[in-house]
Length: 164
Image (cartoon, rainbow, N blue to C red; front, top):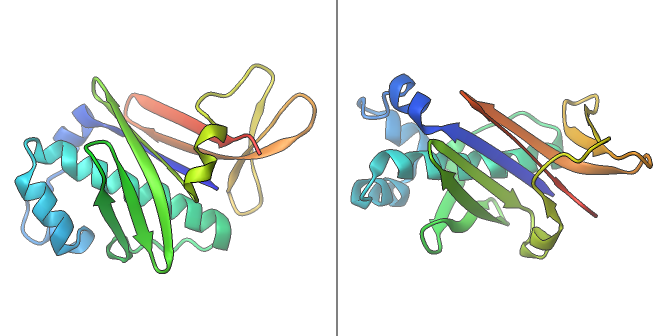
């Protein structure tokens, strides 16, 4: 399955006060806090870690239909600067983050073998819908459906899906 998250870095810089006492302890593990503290750009690292957790959460929500978000249960491990894995219980979700200007976009998949099937845009004639639990999917002109994930923040909106 698939999940994504987008962060408008300009808006996040204005709206977030992540430096306030106790904020990081509620969301990030000690190891993740170390990554933030050692980062050349701590703001960007905060949002990369956050968006990876959020993208993995969307996969879990799709599977369970439960809206339980506990950020400390999601552990991010970076593998290079823009990729890594989110660990949740006994599951692992590879992710990739791309930053273009003020837009930080992270996509996570349930397994690395899904990367070739990721579609980054909604095609002509395709319809974005949600099921009764609010989980998004895309229906193409032939009536076939595929899982999707939608995220928006500030000036940015991103939709990804899986061709399966």
